Length: 143
Image 1 (cartoon, one colour):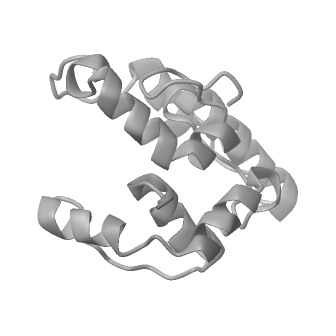
Image 2 (cartoon, rainbow, N blue to C red):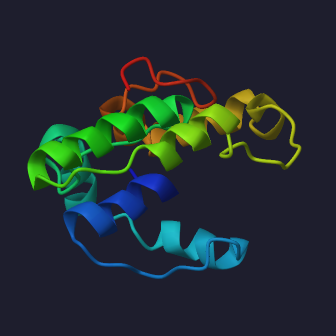
């Protein structure tokens, strides 16, 4: 049967159905059951129709273009709200790159074999498609 992946299910819950399942995603057994119990075709259909541009989210921030996207979102907030933000803390954070993750880890391809990457791409295909990702471990081509 067709099924949604973890990321697709989380987006379906929070942005389409607006329900938060509060699943412990660090518990592999619970996560496995969560995915297996969510094969409802209506959820799959809803994800296929999901439109990033007309969702409940006004502005998206991609990890690979974090500061540029965040700045654009904050500027959009200023325009829409009429609130003038103090930009010095933001510019300071950008200048000192305080967002860097201090953890050391191997490249994505170490954790995802070609078969596993293909499985993730298949089950979360709508997420990859809607946000412009062509590969499991690559950057968005359309952020």
